[in-house]
Length: 304
DNA sequence: ACCAGTCAAGGAAGC
DNA sequence: GCTTCCTTGACTGGT
Image (cartoon, rainbow, N blue to C red; front, side):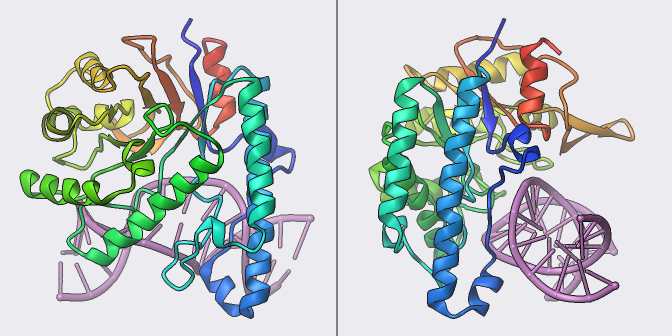
């Protein structure tokens, strides 16, 4: 039976036992004197890296073969009034040491690592500040991946959406113009995921035609987004088109189920799976976006 | 200790 | 054209 599940950011089992990530808002950060605020932020960040480590170990223990690192491990750093790299942090050496421990853990038992930078980041914006902010965010992800010793290729994908709707060729030109400017640590890992806007552009069909085929970039297949915006493709055809776009790499796809309201499938994620996904080629990993997180995976591991 | 409201992002969608 | 919504778990402040 298919068993290549990827845990999305959080283990509910761990959080129920009090192991949680910490965050920090800019509002709060800006209220404190800078030195004090930075010290608190550093403490929280180190805590988060340790929590990510524990979560990866949890995956190893529970037969979960991949892990999506949360994009909130390092709060605020990319904020326009903070603008720090991980390496700028006063406790950088502690963070490096903790990342080295994660590296060792990953060497003992392989866990595939990926990330899904915030859905608000965009390479398609007409506003250059917005694009710059997005690139800074991506650079932070690449910096972390490098610290974790992750390969600079699609085995450790950074997955984003193309957010803008409208004139496809204009948007693609914009996105690819910005793509060329990205450092290799981002570019060699960056993949694009189908989205589900009403009558939206970014179905699997259009991503394959306008992004993957001309520019040789893998496409992430998301089951739920596809069922909301199939764009004339069956689930099987969309899955296999996306599958083939990964070439020699093993694809990492997203699995979730939507809540049905008044007989209409919505994009809201269910807590727990009701059905087992059809995996049209078993050589994939499925990142489980159901809200029960690891507990949803346990259900899938036990064939519901 | 608990609860409700807030936070953070940029664009879509709805008035 | 303006407002609301989307998304998420943790933070925050009031009780």
